[in-house]
Structures are given as C-alpha cells and as structure tokens.
Length: 280
Image (cartoon, rainbow, N blue to C red; front, top):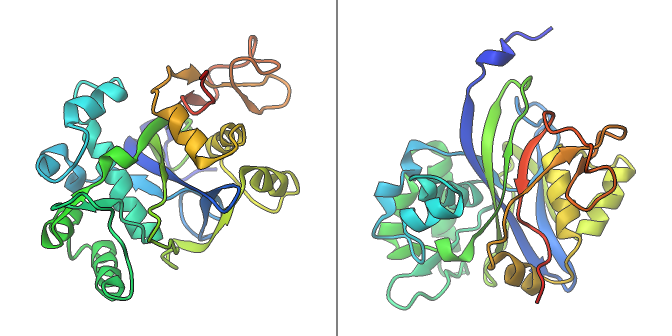
C-alpha cells in the first residue's frame, strides 16, 4: 500500500548525461545511488536530476555557447525552454560527478581541473550542493562559458504512473573533458565506475547491477557502437526519435527492428530514443 496518490504525483522536468570515453574501449560513467533515496534507491544511474529554477534559459543567454534557447528547444520539439534542460544536465553533472562542461571565455579552451584549481572547484561543488551558490555565479566568477555544444540530445523518458516521483527526463550524451576526473558525491551517490556497455549488460544479467529500464535501454543502444567518436558522429546528425515499446512476453523494452516490436505494448513505458548508429 502506498502513502501517496499515484495520479497526483507531479511530473517534473529533468535531465541526465551519459559521459563516455574510450578507455581504450568505449565506456560510460556509472554511479550507484544510495539505497535509502526515495527515487531509484540502489540503482546504477547516469549523472542527472530535476530541472531547477536556476537553470532557466534567460539566466544563461550570455554565458552558454553553441546553442540558443530557440535552437535547443527545436532539438527537443519544444516551443521554448530547451536550454534549461542542457543547463540542468551541466549543473547536475558537476554536483554529482564533479565534471564541469565549460570553456574559458577568452579562447573557448575546455576547462581543466588540475592541481592549480582543483581545490577551488571542489569548494564550488560543495557550495552548489549546499545551495550556497548557483552555477551561473561560478561560471561568471571563473570567466567560463557553459559548453552546451559538447552535449547532444539523445532521448526522452517519462516515469510511468505508480512511482513516488515522476520525471519527464531528457537524456544527453557527451565525451568527458580530457583533463577532468569524475568522482561521485558520496552522499546520494555511494559508488562510481567506468564500464563498457557490454560489461554493464553482463552484470545486469547476473543481477550484480540494478538498472532502471530506461537506463538499461540506453546502455543497450550504446552497445551498438565501437568508440566514443563513432557515437558523437552519429548523434551529431540529430536522427529522428524512435518510440520505445515493451515486449508483450518478456517485459523488455524494445526498439524498431527488434523481435516483438510490431505488437509490443505502448502504454507501459513512455520513451523516445535517438541514440543509434547512422548510415555513413
């Protein structure tokens, strides 16, 4: 018996980022949520969270690069406000994983976190998580631009009815900056690691990793690629959305072209995915 009314749970906008790298094989950064968290406790996830008021596109009109709000919104078939999802993804990635997707204003060189500035940015991260500073202030103080162009929109998933928290989550993918090292926040996130998509799928099958169904589906799609460069080349083409469905017998999320898709269920999971190999 639940202590909430499922039909009354609000659906909040959210954003999450798949950080990828060749190490030397294609790998994605995964984090394990604390078992006692209300949403997705004990699950392995990508960095991400709800869109906040500080992510509003109007705050970032002069310090976000490569995409205007109109351009970001068009990518997601929104009338406006698309840039807020990108900014939420950047903020949450810094809060949860310590990775800041940003460029120096004067030469658009990617931010490097090294012995010279690492302590200062660790303090920014602590303040941001505590609510004592916002991301815009950090960027302005450090003369940085939010590197919106580094991120590519690849999917949308809406939490099904019945969860105590529901999200309309936009998924992005990005290569990790070469001179930054991710680490979980040791609060909501208790563990983190780089893993190949195939290793994740194997651990899931052995019940050694718990994944939400959209996360699992995104890992399956990522497994179709051989390198991070191949991934970025494919998603830069902004392919059309493909609607996810649920296999009638297995309950597994399936995509067009996979067995059982034609008569699969459409009312169980609401997802639209663009992450897939593209013709050359």
